[in-house]
Image 1 (cartoon, protein in one colour):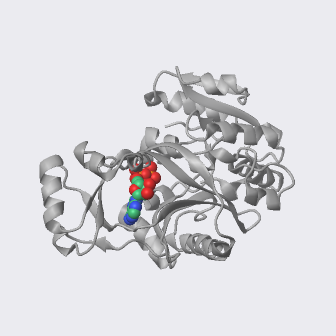
Image 2 (spheres, rainbow, N blue to C red; image 1 turned 90 degrees about the vertical axis):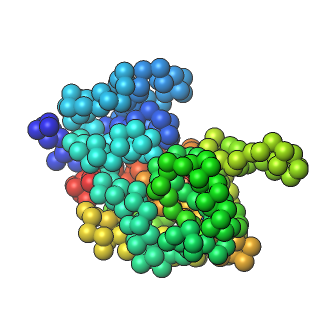
Length: 351
Ligand code: ATP
């Protein structure tokens, strides 16, 4: 393992640092956000995927790797030499895997250990329920199913293979026919309502929680099944999948905002009891379903920037209220880092 320490971590000049991220997911806004805050940036791309970062001209520097398996000691040395602060996002965690993320030696924005809590469904549930968050009911075994459930296989990317069952017979029928080898799954109450993703930012520098924006996802094929009539759906034997293709901005009923603030605040407060570094800070997202009675159920937390913030490179209706300049989540991260550096509090935002 590399022994180098960041060379300028004592400097209080943001120009001595660089904000680095992997070229994917939400890298465009992270890079632009760094630049807008006057901090140099760097993107690490897998060869063949660098075009957007060149075309949009948002990257000051680019490092190319043949494969993510090359995320090794020498790449880390390079990042440390440049005094880079890594910004994790969904692809970073998915491509490297939680174990390699835990071992990164370069400066890392956020609390690494929180990844364990967000990626393990039972730990995630412990955390959120203690924070008073309402979650879909979980059924221990198929025989307990007494209402529609969504069957989630472990490690299913993009909700692939998720299916709905109303009884244990229905569950076994589909599972044994289509997924005979998959024995690790969660049986979660299926909530009828609209999906809504709340994008938060908690700054451990200003000690304030902000709601940056909201989105809903554009998922294939879940968002297109309704384009054909029910009979045709049955005839075509279509199975629902939730492969994310894009994100759509949402503005919520204003009367719901106090509740969303309270939920975010409670999740941050409860994270302090998890005994992981400085707890949850920076960007995070509560993935909700809102019912017709306006009950809010959270089915997942992402303890990092989510791609649903990408439509808001120029800020959202909410950040426009608070900031006089366009404030993306990427830029908000850069500002947090910049303020931490200037106040000599960098250690408070590195995990
Ligand atoms: P991610 O990339 O966020 O981890 P995923 O592949 O794990 O996604 P989920 O986000 O867990 O999948 O769920 C996929 C879709 O299923 C979501 O868009 C949501 O609309 C729907 N969904 C998940 N859980 C429930 C639930 N309990 N009730 C109703 N719909 C749900």
